[in-house]
Image (cartoon, rainbow, N blue to C red; front, top):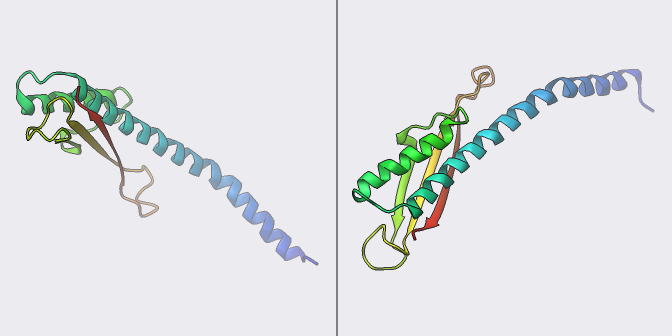
Length: 137
């Protein structure tokens, strides 16, 4: 048989959960939204790198790919810097050169998210990252 005291504790736990659950769900939804933006930015950069021809050499092309990634993320309020974008090529066709048709391009994007209440919960930053690999046409 349950005593009055154990019923009060069960009720207290239910009230605490009801108070904190909306906040936790809001934080999780925000993190998922930011992760989707980072994934979309990496995908757009890889798509541009795979379909756009290199006009002024590979270094100029890499800068243009970075610009596309930054533009994609900027529309959603997420600020990604050039330092957080890594672009590499893989020699998939084994011809000894990188960036040719048949090779692969890998665009990796990372974002450092700082929660508003991070200092209260001892959580300074959350690193969110995604990479996308596409074959070059």
